[in-house]
Length: 287
Image 1 (tube, rainbow, N blue to C red):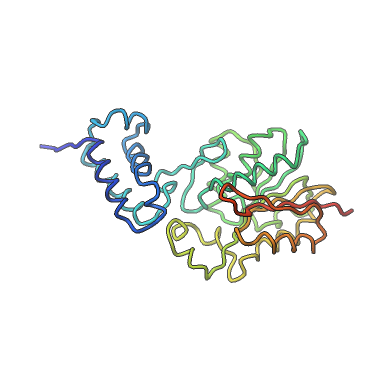
Image 2: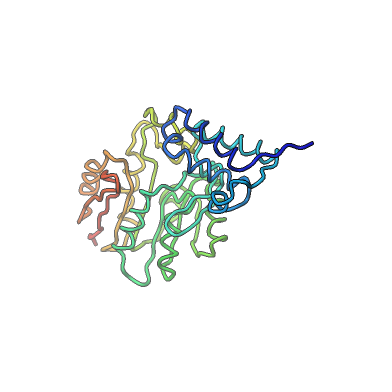
């Protein structure tokens, strides 16, 4: 005889398991994570799960759910377990090939939309990953011509799949930073490049330990990718065009200095909801 259990019972057990973990990012939202993973395993909404704790859970589903909880307890990002992540107004598909889009990156989108008010504009997103920033901009400004570059074949496949699924028009090109953009100039350049030093212990903890190193660190010099973008940007911006960059919480001052040295004007940084300098922008005003 097959023994079934209820959603309420397996959920309570999962919450206790997550609470027992020593990993901060798994412990902070234990109840929500357990609920979302069970809803995913059952193929129901979280609202239905919470309103019907008596829902039967088949043994096979219970085993699959237990495996998901174990992976979350080990620090694996929730987005990799469910295969989706909400960003801006979009639901994106994600995989271990891409960085999980984060709320603070929405500030990059906000600043880009504020700086470029033109109905029609040429925009490039450098190192697009899942396509989050490029797709968010294109969804808000359908008349913009948005191009996105990405060096990783696997990440580019995820970005293209997201664009197709959402029905949003973005041109994707494979290559590192400006390499696929030879001879092209844009009104706006945006990027959320890798900016964590390779020896930073944060890369070994929690969610970051599971995310692609290529998207997180440029190597020993945490600012290497940011510098490369700053130094190449002028060749790919029209006069008056803007460069908008996400960076580490302690990197704003150094990045502003790099931008001034490269001849950019109106250099300024903006803080995220946690109060950290997170996005820096600058205007190309040279002929």
